[in-house]
Figure 1: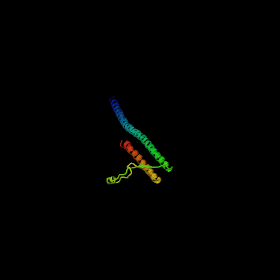
Figure 2 (figure 1 turned 45 degrees about the horizontal axis):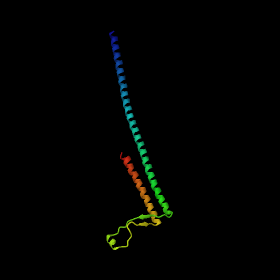
Figure 3 (figure 1 turned 30 degrees about the vertical axis):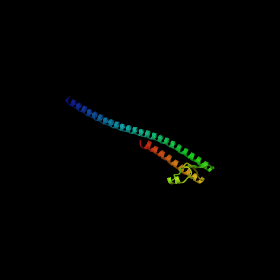
Length: 155
């Protein structure tokens, strides 16, 4: 019986060691898989947050674009209307002030007032409207870019 007991104890020890090793192996796998799952979950949340932020920024940029495109189109329409009126024989009048040296003011008695209007030739009027259109276009583009930088780049 001594020999059978000893063999049974050895076999039970071998089985216990095998079970302990197997348990440790599966526990290590479970911990490793849990870490991988947590990392993947974190990366997924980060990717979703990035996508949400990008979507919001795209909507904001589209709204900015629509706003300033409409303003630019309105300004171009007004300028085109002015050009059409000029081409149809309308007039372009420019109000101006003439600065006259002080000694000329005292010696000259017959002079025109400072708030007179000047009529431009059709070619000059067209040039003024073309320059105006360029200035309006540049101002609208600058407003758009400044708003874009303020709302998108500085976030």
